[in-house]
Length: 290
Image (cartoon, rainbow, N blue to C red):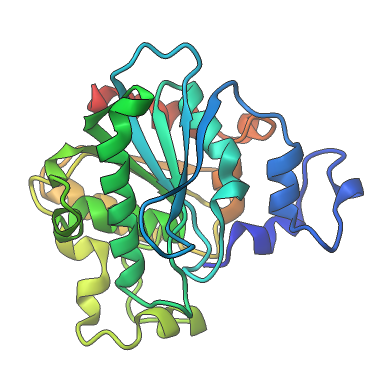
């Protein structure tokens, strides 16, 4: 599950390739130069813990009236790469649709392995909940959103309530989950990164989001692209099937011609026309967040 930064080189927004430099990743340049949705960056680099990786940014809708649903977004990167600044366009996109939005960093391999990054993500949700009112957000209406490894993180927090409880958050505050191209059912482990991150875990089945589905799991928007050859669409199918079997509402989307990276880039303003991910995802989240 490589990071967007590692594979964005395959395609660029028109005119972007001419300004890419060796000193700046394609994703960083995309985040810097691409047109963005109207929203406000109201907090930058807020600490939710003592580690330098335990930082987050907050975006709000322009002209918000308060009590907006609270979205926390976790980016992908195979649990060994990524930074929140390169996803400012996601924060602005979600905020432009009415969500007070937190984009959080978390510790990565080799500094940590499973489950430490999940504990970080839960602490980020705790910070977002504690400070939501300061930014016009409602801490009782949380939605968790993620792409790739970040979708795994979001799913684990939404489905296995122990992480949020340990961080001091009532899991019932999570009203919906949105996972884009996430790995939810990936045993046996394949590839170096999953072996390094999860291989020391005594109970490997316990690392899988599908293991924690119950009738009280939050509704889920699960999307993948049929051209994704990095995180197989069968992961989305498996989690959606488990949730439906438990009686949980699921909206499962398979976008034709969309690969792993284009899934998250479809949230961006310049590439949104390739698939209606943002419209369909935010409509589902608003409906369940109230």
